[in-house]
Image (cartoon, rainbow, N blue to C red; front, top):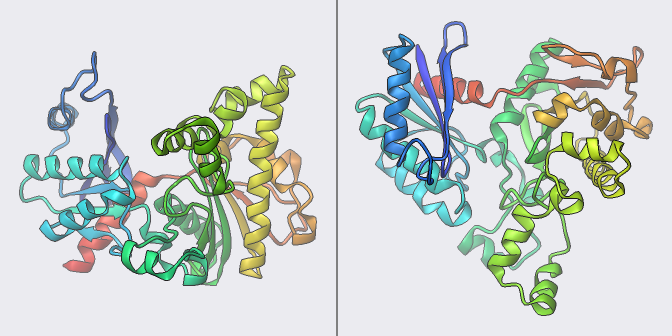
Length: 378
């Protein structure tokens, strides 16, 4: 079976084709700046036509199914969904919850349906994995009618990544996922933590939107909600201005002027005190969530680092793990700096709590989820 995975953004489409027998990438690429001045493609339709041409040139034919990344599925989707008119309508109804993402995801779906008629297509939702959270974790302390009428609650994101590395951790440890308690840390430009008990998400750091939680590249993460009112009153910023400030101009970028952790660390090493603080705040916030989730889980088998920063920054991993010995976190700093193409294990020899670095592969997880959904319906 060949599965094409599409991740359609507002001005880009990332794609990969997987041969599911070996779960190997047969082709992949990115078309960006769609619809922008100077961009190659004027529309998502043209971009997908270009992808088809690229696949044909690579000798890849006979796509059996298409898996689409969709950011927000609300409470409607607890698992991947075979796309039909009702699913499309529901994704459209979720646009108010993810106005920056769902419209682009939906456009990718609708264009793919036109260009690949008759081929089954599956929506895989970033929020679905976290639909196992209990109300004590997903509800906000707000009037109940806001939840009942407007679905104001915590949803969580990066679900495909958290699910993938949890499965990989179980396979690596040769344990049944149902018997494991894990904390997974997806640390990249966007960041989130998840508490996973027996393979199910029971809490996660992102909320109704991806803004809540950890310090990120350009997002502030957890802040006092009253800041919105203060900034509006004292600076005259509109609601749209504040939303842009918190999402695009804050986080690492707001603290020291750059949002890429590699640049932050280079500045910190040169003596830039703002960058030093930004790096320290980033790790400190992650550490707080690790401690909180150990308390939530009660028993913890492994902490898993993934994402661009989680996989490649040994010093962030070391800062996160420092001073957590009381919880059984005992990093081996030499092993932590080792380079490996696969899974890295870096706890001390006698430690029972595993510290793992597992490369994420969200596209492969979307392909797997697509195949499972088609098998379930066959």
